[in-house]
Length: 148
Image (cartoon, rainbow, N blue to C red):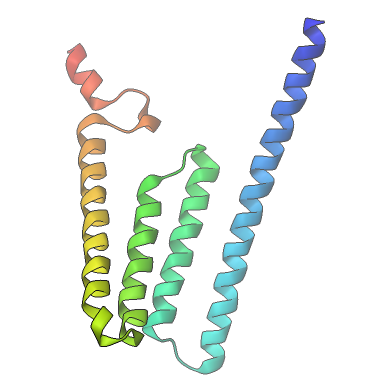
């Protein structure tokens, strides 16, 4: 009875592993396809606007995040924050100009406040990674200091 359960668990683990890689390849392909599509649109129009360039940066960061996740099986939170900062910056530069003047100041302040908070979170994550190490390292520098 236990051997059947072990076999079922191995099959289940294999299917989850297969789905994981198929999903990552699918997401990576969609990012590449979208990036190439937008790039070709820019080439066809004969110029790239600031909006287009910032969109390409978002695609680049998404691709890097998928690549890191593919290799390490860990979701790099810092890349998600970089993507959010880039998306908010794009929104700030492009979309805020089209908002009415009465609401403009509040939207501007809230967007810049969100960018500042996200930037602070990157600073905190970078500091804690430098001081205490990252989970990928296995042993953090803090543990090494305590052992000596």
